[in-house]
Amino acid sequence: MRRWSAGRPGPTTLWLSAAALALVIALVNPGLPGERLVYDYLFVIDISQSMLVRDYLDDDGQSVSRLATARKAVDDTISRLPCGSRVGVGLFTGWNSAIAFRPIEVCGHRDELASVVERVDWRMTWVPQSNVARGLFATIDQIHDWPRPPALIFLTDGDEMPAVDADNRPDPPASRDRVRGMLVGVGATSPSPVPKFSLNGDNRGFFTQGGEPLTSRLAAGYLETLAADTGFGYARLNRPEQLAEISTDPAFSRPVASTRGIGWVAALLALACLVWRYLRPHRHRLVRRACGATE
Image (cartoon, rainbow, N blue to C red):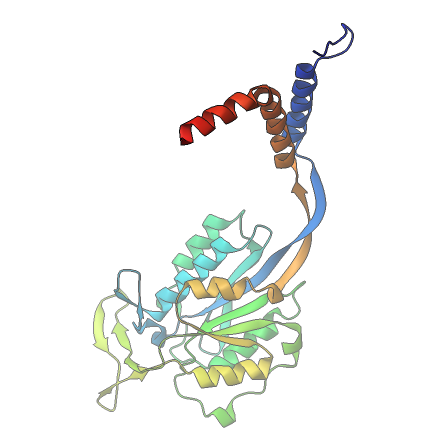
């Protein structure tokens, strides 16, 4: 039998002291220097009339508009971006984009961002026409000289009114090399009639042209061409969650300094000390009981 002198701490004291020290470290939660990835985005949403075409289905199988799908996609994406990321929101119609606000930090302004995105509405349009190429190029020109320009995510169906001859589209801006981004195609490739609403939101049927319903579909080929002209990527939005997958691509990230807390390691060590001290003397008895329970 081991004996301990009066001036020498016993094993219980040693194990409890070690556990107490580990718990203190866990509470302080020191950190190790490192880095993590964050994202800076400007989401621009097309609010022209064709974005009211209902060619998506929600989780309940109900048809929803392109605009509602784009709003949900942006909102879901903002909620999934890591803290420290920044997001701004803009609206496109006509030949330009209106920037509602420049990028702000997502975690500290989550409610404000969600509120703005939720209120994006077709009634905010300022002209009835749309020219996607001019709107995209003008947006790039607006943001290229911002300090640390955000990546531009431009959500549109590519439908233009009046239709623009592809050979007559404007030249891409010289500033395109300073802005990264994605063109996100919203809508189905099969044509659907464009609904007509009053300013109160009452359905007034469909727009007509030459006595026939005016239809709209995703102009995927056109958007791919614009993406190539600007050095952007292109993706079709098949479901709202897809935008978050696109937006968390490390290619759009930037590293920031961070610290990683190691308090959880100290907490595990404290638990291990307590388990070892109080269960080790009884290990043979516990093993016998465990073996007896399996017989």
